[in-house]
Length: 230
Image 1: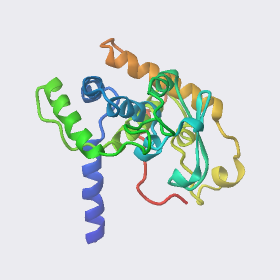
Image 2 (image 1 turned 45 degrees about the horizontal axis):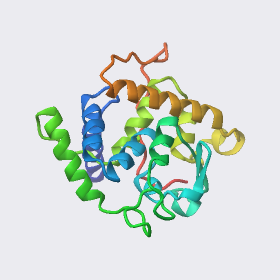
Image 3 (image 1 turned 180 degrees about the vertical axis):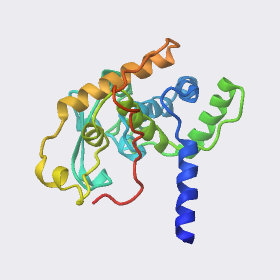
Image 4 (image 1 turned 90 degrees about the horizontal axis):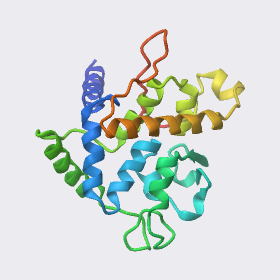
C-alpha cells in the first residue's frame, strides 16, 4: 500500500507540472526563449515543436537531416531503435538557422553538443516569471514533450500517430499494434507536426485559436511513461 500512495503522489506532482497547450505559461515560455536567444532558445522551441526528448534533439547532427526528416540512430533513442523524426517547416527553419560549426546542430564550440540545460532552465524560468508577473517553477523540459503529445491529441489525431511521433514502441500486451499492425503512419505524423506547429505559432502570436476537437469525447491527455519501453 505504501508504494501505491507513493505512486499516486508522483502522478499528482507530474499532473501539476503538465500544462494544457492553451495554457498561458507556454506562450510566456516561447517569448522567454526568444529573449534568451543563443543556442538554448531555439533548441527549447525545437523540443516543443517536435516532442523529441532533450538529448535526442541536443545530439542532432547535420548528417542526420534528410529533407523534412531527422534520422536518429538507435543508440540515442530510449527504445534502442533507429528513428525518423518528422520536422515541421517551423522546426526545420529553427534547425537550418543554426550556424554550421561542426558535426552537431546545437553546439557552441563545434566539437560537442550543447550542455548546461539546468542553467538554461533557470534563465528561462526567470524570463517566464517576468512575462507572467509571478514565479514560475516546477516544470521540466520533458513536459514540453507531454504538452506536444496532448496538443496533437487535441487536434484530433489517433494514438498511433502520436506514438509514431514520440517514437513509442507498442507494449507486448497490445497484440494488434505490436504484432499485426505494421503501418508506419509517416504521412499522418508529418501532417500532425505541421498542424501542431501552426497551432503553436498562432497561439504565441496572440491570435485566438479554436482547436479542432473530435466530436465524440474530450481528447485524451497523452502521458509519456517513464517506464522502460518494451
